[in-house]
Length: 179
Image 1 (cartoon, rainbow, N blue to C red):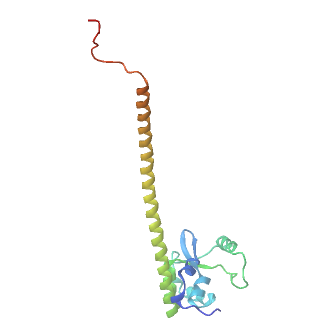
Image 2 (cartoon, one colour; image 1 turned 90 degrees about the horizontal axis):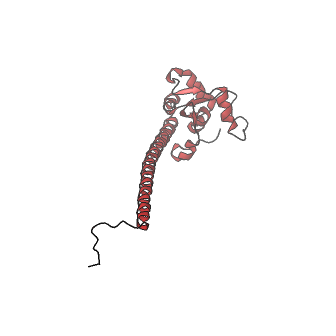
């Protein structure tokens, strides 16, 4: 096993790259969490199985064979031993927090706090992106309305120009010069 990295120096990008979307939920896999927590995947899974009552379906679930095949197809090269013959567990944000309680190590607690912070940052980014999209839609609607108004103005200009080209009928009294 590799030398564990200090939680304080784990870059957010490393954590973000280990977050996947399965069943509409952002999750991290048991092998990635084991690496970050500095434990073997086998030991992590043992602790989860011993404390399975702490992991309801929305905290942790096992990937199906199809989901695992999709995941494996995303990795071009498979290093020997990196991908287990067993289906991986996927942990939601809440499951990761619960996992640190089950592993009972200070490193697990520190790393899980760092991971939760990354999840919160991702949520904040998604919300701010949503707000930006809503503002863009408002601007698009305003621009569309302004385009329509400009079209109306040009139609009025065209009508005015057409009227100037036609000779106008004179109105009022005509004074004859015959006197």
